[in-house]
Length: 296
Ligand code: SIN
Ligand code: FE
Image (cartoon, rainbow, N blue to C red; front, top):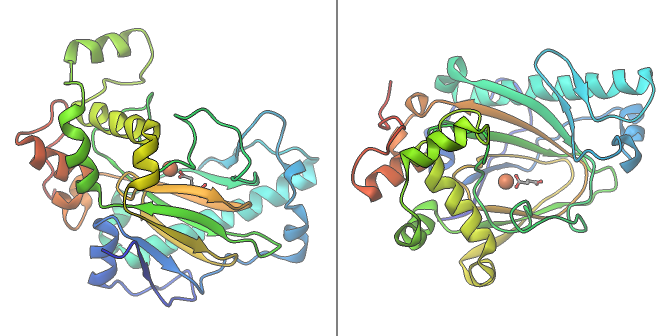
């Protein structure tokens, strides 16, 4: 399976929907748009510096209510950054609407993120280190199989690429680790929720995904030796993937915009292609606390 499928698209709006691209993204491949740049004005480009980031935060975020967090700078700077990020949020939504029209009524947008930090030199614990191959899974926010669809744009003003590693198909990962994972405990899930570790009850799906995330990151040999590709996303390019499905690691690069959309599995073109579908099939029964992956 090719890690990346290139799509020759140069406009954010009005993208035609193509079954090949839908199949690719739902199979965990990265859709890569080499000619789709997020355009910045000269004044916007001048804003991009590490000093834009407020002290102690990792990313700048803009939520759906227009609230901007993480920017160091006066009111004019805040306004400009908010405008830029709001524009990206709209364009990302338009792109997804064009590519995957059936998703559109079911998408829930997460806050938009601007990442001004150089990835290669960031200090991080093993578990938080996104330079290690992983699938996205969140310890405090169970999602019961809901999808994480992400649009990324490299806006580096000096032309530096964002470099990723893209790993093996999710099913290969799941087959490798499933036999070693601790069984799900509904009792433990209730305790974690009761003491406030999780915001809702952790399902068996969340339990398995988190363990996959943690195990693969901690496995030095897997990180070194598992099948993987190095992929460069040049400045001025855009890419889209389901980051709960695509095995990915961000190795280097600076200044990126990112928009996450959450999507119910039942709104996918092929729900059985999802991590929930694959894990359910491999376990051989519905996962506890999670839906059965069928089209709704
Ligand atoms: C990640 O989602 O793991 C990081 C992506 C990136 O920073 O390029
Ligand atoms: Fe990630």
